[in-house]
Image 1 (spheres, rainbow, N blue to C red):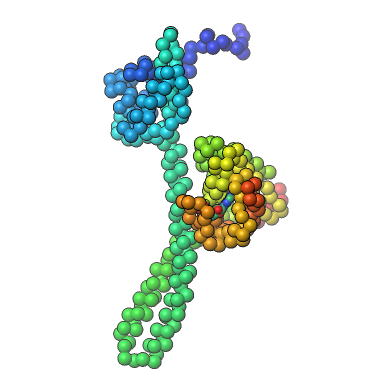
Image 2 (tube, rainbow, N blue to C red; image 1 turned 30 degrees about the horizontal axis):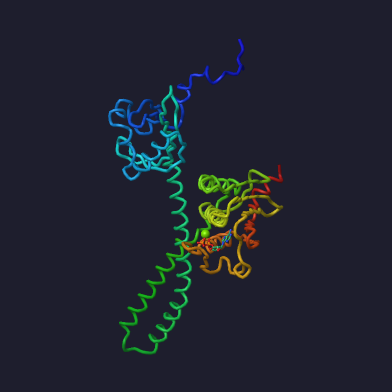
Amino acid sequence: MVTNQRITAEELDFKQVVDHSLNAKLIIDGTNVLYVNNACLDMLKVDEEMLIANGYKSYFHPDYQEKYENSVARALEGKRVELMEQKMIRSDGSLIDVEVVCAPFYNKGTTLVQVIIRDITERKENEKLLLQSEKLSMIGEVAAGIVHEIRNPLTTIKGFLQLIESKDKSDQKYIQIMKSEVTRIEKIANDLLKYSKPKVESFKVENIVEVVQDVLFMWETEAFKRKITMEFAATESNIPILSEKTQITQVFINLIKNAMEAVDNQGEGEITIEIHKSAAHVFIKIRDNGYGIPKEMLDKLGTSFHTTKEDGTGLGLMVTYNIIKNHNGTVIVDSQLGEGTTFTIVLPIEYENRKMESSF
Ligand code: ADP
Ligand code: MG
């Protein structure tokens, strides 16, 4: 028996391939469902009879119906339609985010439409979390900055209150109230600072290569959508550092977000991430071929809320610099206007692990 013989397309029963595909697929004639695969039924939580009885259109979110109908009409004319993001409604009423492609399907002289649907709910959730975590860490940093500013005048007020207390015996009651209120503000401020700064105990040994790869994975689809190429290279697969994982993750989220924004709409956007190490340090380089940073701005990076973007906050780099400082690291920026920017993060490698490594 010949086992590795090639089979021609005509000999293959493609229905089996489609039946078991992970993507949801439907074949329609514009109005009726002629075929639906299991993935589609699973995704919408319906059985075949129910789908046919209800009509597949009812599973598309009303806001997207028109866009969807247009795509079907174009496909019926034999044109391929671009990928679109839509929302669908399952039979239990829950919403899912999907990507839909409609393509013409020629069958025995008639043009039908094949609808290919991919569930991207999880990806959408990840994107939301990504933004959420950026906002949270920004709020933390802003809080820390404000608290810092509040503490100095409070110390002055407290000092003078003590002075008045010892000199003026007439209004003791008011002075006591003022003192306790100042103490209360101080406590609130200190608590706020405690929450916004990572605790030293929460620093753990983390593999920085994996942290960076996880962030790249999160940005992958976004980069793909914006037609940006992302390259990654690391000289080792495990480089241990001592860090607060959510914070250090935030650094790379911020830097890659900035890099993507810098190359966006410039065409041929390219971002490369390289990791290498010396005896004591790990270097993570994030290079983009975007619009670059003007010389006069370079020195101020990470110290003020400076932004050149319409919807920017100028917080991303502040947060980044602060986190790296808390990790005993440094940020080096190299940029040429119109050519691109390289951010290099230098962090100390976790010593305990280096000792272990060299003792082997
Ligand atoms: P935001 O992104 O909200 O503007 P950031 O603190 O992240 O705030 O960045 C501050 C500014 O630094 C940006 O507005 C931009 O002008 C500049 N910048 C940061 N990263 C890059 C980069 N990779 N390329 C070009 N400019 C950058
Ligand atoms: Mg930013």
